[in-house]
Image (cartoon, rainbow, N blue to C red; front, side, top):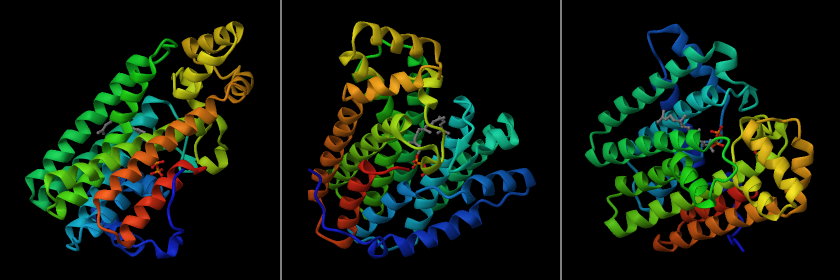
Length: 326
Ligand code: GRG
């Protein structure tokens, strides 16, 4: 079981720092080009949970770093995250994000990709201003791996025979890598030694994996209003995620054929039947169990940190990431 002492959101030590980060985000979004201002304000203004900046801030705080670079780095990881969302929604032809029409639906694919490029390159300008080679090293590596993950995922589309191991590799690359980098950067700022930095990175990798497992689960059992994006998108795209892979292992031959067909052809028509199979076979519960196991690994990695309010908030984040509905 995941354990933590109860932490009221108001007591989260990252809350006031996050307001500073939002100010940096607003300031650094500005461009001479009106369409960039308009689209970036549209997507950033829609909110988001700010998990990755929270990781930078909480690890920096847990390790005693209080310099202003933490706000800049927190904003940088949010810009990179937002750039990947803009690109991802084009690739996936998604229509809803953060409870609003996606930027691609509002402004078109070209504008969306290009503003993603702006945010991504602005993040690199900001990294240079932090003037630490390790920061550039960590983020250059992370962004490259994220792109590899997205291409691997593209290669796996419509493949009902995808191995769970290969599915996990994709989620470690496309999602967990930025969580890992965010946690690691808090440690880099604080000048942590190599072993401690690795423990922080381990936390981020495990939490990011848990987070994506839940994301894939919510695509079947979630509610579009709460999620702020359309459920069933993964099936529509023919994306073989863990709930489907596990359901196929456990279903009857006829049911397996139905799921295989849906993955191969990417169709929503059979969503209600497939959802019933995924539920009945326990594939959703098993996906949540896999997420819980990853979140527990993340919590174990936190033992390397001294006790503090920031460490408590990180423990709490593990619980919330598994038991979330948005
Ligand atoms: C620009 C470096 C770069 C790469 C482009 C398209 C692409 C390659 C990568 C996409 C990676 C991606 C979107 C992975 C999914 C990650 C994920 C779980 C997103 C949702 O995160 P939340 O729930 O979003 O934290 P909010 O809206 O709360 O911020």
